[in-house]
Each structure stands twice: as structure tokens, then as C-alpha cells.
Length: 196
Length: 93
Image (tube, chains in turn blue, purple):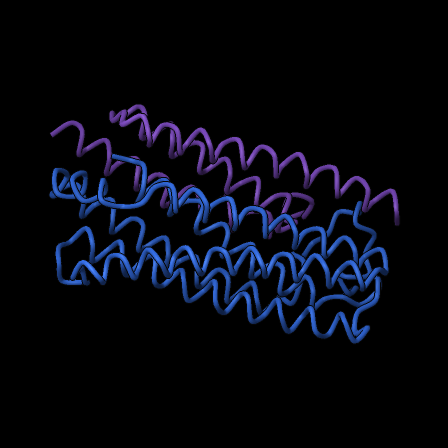
């Protein structure tokens, strides 16, 4: 099989970018989140008033900032992949560090949200809405932390000149994972914070 | 290679602008306090379109031939459908 990273970007490829193993992991993670989202929606069916009432206690502006941060970081990661395809490892590192910076914004804002809720005595057993809200967002939060670690490792290797236009599967693997983290949040944000 | 990456940058930037625009529309709908089945489904539709754009252009699945094009589309379709059914049933009871 031809290495996907050596293929002209305009050619039609048969395999997704990055290591195939990360895609098995990504699909497994997406399945878990799909079950979570569906469970939230069907549990809400029998608790509409409760869900609508406590949804109003969430900080939608914080969620907006976090959504923009994740989308922007995903865009920066795309630019990092394109930079390494051009053979520009320096810019690849810069884009990756910018993406990690956006991830840090997400972590700080989300951490302040969690602190606010826990400071008000809210926990998983407060009610069904908060059980879903806290478990879903914390599970996603852990994925953001892991993703930042992966991007940092990729940036370090890029800094050391470890990637070339012909061989940068590591960058694409890290990028694919980070886009998955972004993708999940794009559904989570409207479902938990807006839809009522 | 430069031509290819130039096209990639342009496509990614356009998608980024669309994603941010859809996000602000979603936020403003939330802030307006509007609540109905149609509004919820519109917000969900925006989210699913955003998800497909991320899958196709950011994750790079849009240019793939064969089954690997499908996982993200299927992932968006299944929970998207279940959420739609759940919200529809909630509104009709």
C-alpha cells in the first residue's frame, strides 16, 4: 500500500490521513459520545421542564468562547499539516503551539465553569440534568487535555525536524485526534447549552 | 505542492469562517431565549453541517474514495436522528 502521506493532496486517497490505528480509536470514542448524546436526548424526554430550567443556569457565553477556541485551534492544526506538507517545520511548530494555546483557553474557561458549579455545591447527584452535563463535559474535557499532550509531542518532534513533506504521518495522526475533539464539542455545545 | 497547499489553505479558511458564523447564529438563538421544536431542529441542523464540514475539510475525509468517507457522516446521522426523534416526541407529548 502506498503511504498516504506521500500522495499528492489533490489525488483521491483511499485511507484517511494519519495512522489507521488512530481512526479505530477515534471511531470508538465517537461511538461513546453518540450513545451519551442520545441518552441525554431521550432522558430529557421525561424531564423536559427540569432540563430546560437547569440549562438556564449554564454559562452560554463561556460555551461560545470555548467553541470559538476549539474551532480556531482546529483551523490552526490544519495549517500546521499544510505547513509540514510544504516542508516548513518551523511554521508547523508555530501553528501547533497556537493550537495548544487555544486549547489552553478552553481548559481555563471550562475549569472556571466547573469551579463555579462545584463551589455552588453542584455535583453529579444534584439532578439528572447536571449528571449529564458534568459527566459529558468532563469526559470531553479529559479528551482536550489528552489532545493537547499529543499536539505538544508532535510539535516537539517537528521542532527537532522529525517530519518531511514525504513522511509526516505523525502530524496527521495528531491532527485527526484533535479534530475529533473539536467535532464532538460542535454537537455538545448546541445540545447541552442551546436546544430546549 | 504549493498550489495544492494554497488550495488547502483557502478551503480551510472558508470553512473556518462558516463554522464561526454558524456558531454565532447558534449562540444568538440561545441568547434570544427562543424555544420551539423547529428552532431546536434548526440549531441541530447547523451543528450537523458544521460536523460534516470538519469531517470533510479539516479531517480530510472529503477527498477520500470508498468507505472511509462515511464514518463521520454516519456518526452525525445516527445521533442526529435520535436527538431529532427525542425532541420531536418531547414536543408532541
